[in-house]
Image (cartoon, rainbow, N blue to C red; front, side, top):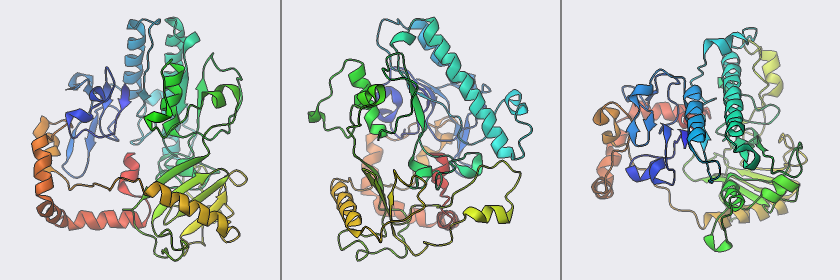
Length: 426
């Protein structure tokens, strides 16, 4: 694996090299500096975050991450036997914040008035060249004819940091299509029907069974996977075996003020933030997040009269939305009042999924995670003994959190604005 992990590292057992990958070069946290690899999780809580295997890669500091990660991938391809199977997961840091790019890429977009959009475009171009170089390497060493390249976003764009989801509604961190409708492409000589756009319903959990099957592995229903083999849909244009997607159920997010069990036909509390897609229908409950349609940021600033053309002024007292997402991909026409039977059927699906949900575990901050206790770098800090202590000392830790009143107020403020500090780190 090469790139951004961001799937936990409190114990060594959570590291990429303990979760199935033979090698790893990248960062463990969310939004490190592209050159220095420093990352702060609050005032004074900063550390270095670039790792090679399970060791801190201090010597790589100063190298732009897109270049560094591309160089590692090309090295892997140069040294591996192309006749042997190979899976490489490349999680480029680009184009996440902080918006940083080599000057030579920014210069070509100097005419763009919006500075964030200018830097974003430069970062995208740099990443495009990286993908071109990796593809060229696949061809050079004899992998290409039997390869499958999957390129995909992990979420919608952050519209106030150069990204754009227009004409979709919302942005990263929301349940609107601008937050959950990912775009991408699959490129391979193995594809039978080439050069076309697929509208097949595909979820991230489908990649595992699809790629395992392509590689000659066996995936059965007995494995209990959530995903499907969608290669026939991708390669031949056949119908996807997937008919629904649970986008999320978040019992901890701020409950919608006007939601209630009564609004959910007595079967679902519509104050709870959740979203579900079944066939053509998409249901949202609770507070789905920032709900405007945001035009691309090509201008230096936002003139009020132009900005207000797409500002949402109604629906603030709502807690249930229903859209025919096939006919209305921009989520402009709420049909919840016209189709209460569909709403009820989809709420029952939420209840079904929620019955198997694992209780949320959100432990208090652990001071031992501070990079100062790990030589100045982010890395694993917990042992089994620490976990036993945490379970037995839950109450004192919760009291400790209450002392951080200023930070709590700040987090609450951002939640009300639907910007959520954590959404920028995903």
